[in-house]
Image (cartoon, rainbow, N blue to C red):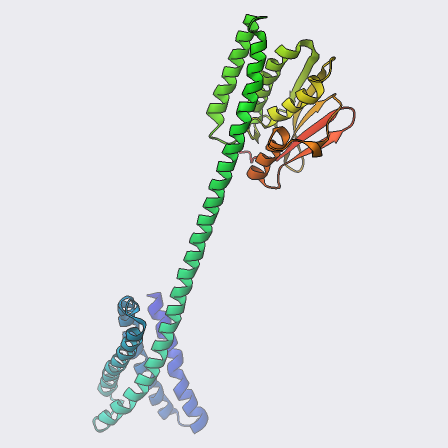
Length: 352
């Protein structure tokens, strides 16, 4: 209904142009002739316009399906047919209401038909060109959006595959160290060896259950870290001292699985393992403005050169995971002074 009202209003405006031009050039006193001119224009515009608006959309789909040459020939012929048919109806209507006399009927029809064909062809062809361009634009836009979605999907699949590959390389590394610890206890302390096997089983259950989710809570990660440190403590005994401090507000935040464990393993490697007196490790998890999660792993060891890290292992592998999963919103920070501190910075997950 709205479309037809808009078309009626447009025809009203177009029908007003001829009488206004008549008055402007012929004199403002010829109102009767201007009224007749408006009646002619208004009737012809609405009859031909409304018929064309009703018929052409029904034929548009078939016409657009034709070869280009036949399509335009068909459009031109159809517009001419509509113009002639509309002229017949409009002339008859004007005759019935008494505006056209019988003796002028044929001449009026002949003259109005020529003008109607000219104007109908002009508006019709222009409308089809516009519709064709709009259709092409919509098809191009849809194609671009489809390609963009396919590209985003491909990038996501590539990122997921990369993360899965990185994580699959971390878990065996952890298990290798854990099993070494158990092997050292089997003969010396079977009971403690059994406890370590239970811890390893707990870790395996954690890795299997959480492997498909991509992220775990800080609380879950800290339990895994504690299991790891207890396993390592069977090797180092009193040489290894550690403490875990988690801000309650940070406990529910999300981190990549085994990320904190990787930092702790690095501290064991540089601060505990090479020194006869062993070392201390402290892990803290806090929230800091603006909306950031900070997990710091400090040890009292001599430290290491972050730029000299071996590629494809430990911290280098963790940084690769962070880049793949977070882009530039996550990072590792290194601070050397009164021990070594490696801080994992992550964006906070939204809370409900």
